[in-house]
Image 1 (tube, one colour):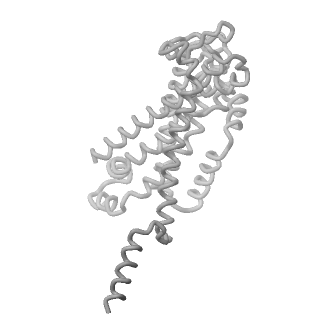
Image 2 (tube, helix red, strand yellow; image 1 turned 120 degrees about the horizontal axis):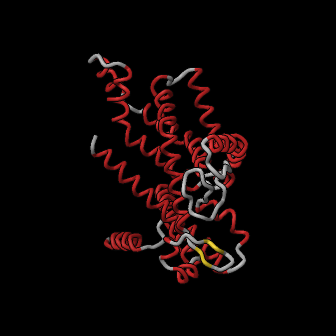
Image 3 (cartoon, one colour; image 1 turned 120 degrees about the vertical axis):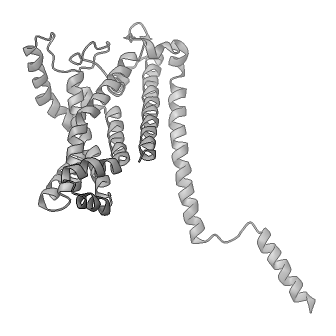
Length: 312
C-alpha cells in the first residue's frame, strides 16, 4: 500500500529538481522583456567602449589637452576639440532659448484653448509634418532664406566679413527644428491636467489666463521640462542642417556672427578626409566627447525635473 505513495513522492521531488520544467507563456513574455532591457544596457555600453577604443590613439597623444586646445591642423597632426564644444553648446542652448516661447505658446494653445476641432486638427498635423521633415530640407531652406537675411543684417550693422553662414544662422534653424518636439510633448502634458483643479480655480473667480499661469503650468511643469529636454537633445546631435549654414570654420568663434563648427558637423565634414590614424582617432574622440556631453546634459535635465516634481 505504501508503494504508490512512495512513487508519488519520488515524482514530486523529481519535478522540483528538474531543470526541464515547461515554461509558461507569461514566463516567456517576461524573459523577452528582461532580455530587451539588458540589450539596451549592453548597446549603450558597447557604443561607449567602441568610441573609447577607437579614440585611444588620440587620447594617448593629446590627453586632457584635446579638450582645451583650440588648434585643429590635419597637416601638422595637432588636434583640439575646444572650438567644437563651444559651438555645440552655444548653438544648442540658444536654440532652446529661442524655441521656448514659440513651443510653449503652441502647447498652451492646443492643450487648453483648442483641444479639439478644425483648427486643432490643422495645427497638430502641421506640427507632425514639421517634425517629420528631413534635416537636409531645413538646411536648404535656411541656406536660401535665413543666411541671406543674416548677411543683410551684418551689412547693415557693418559686421565684416558678412558671410551670412554663422552661429546665429545655425541657431535659428535649430530653434525651428526643435519646436515640434517640445510643443507636442508639452501639449500632451497640459491636456493631462485634472479638470477638477481648473474647475475649482474657475469657481473661485479666476480668469482663463490665471488658470493657465497659476494652475496648469505649475502642475505640468516637470512634464513640460521633459519635453524641452527632449528637444534640446535633438539640437545637440543635429548634423546636416547645422553643417549647411554654420560656416564650418575650425577656429574659435569670437561672436555669434562668425562661422564656426559643432562636434557633429566637423565629423560629417572631415570623416571621409581622415587619411592618417591620428586624424581618424581625433574625430572619433570628438564623437566620444559628444556622447559624454549628451549624457551630462541628460543627467542635469533629469535632476532639474526631479527638483520640480518635489516642489509641487
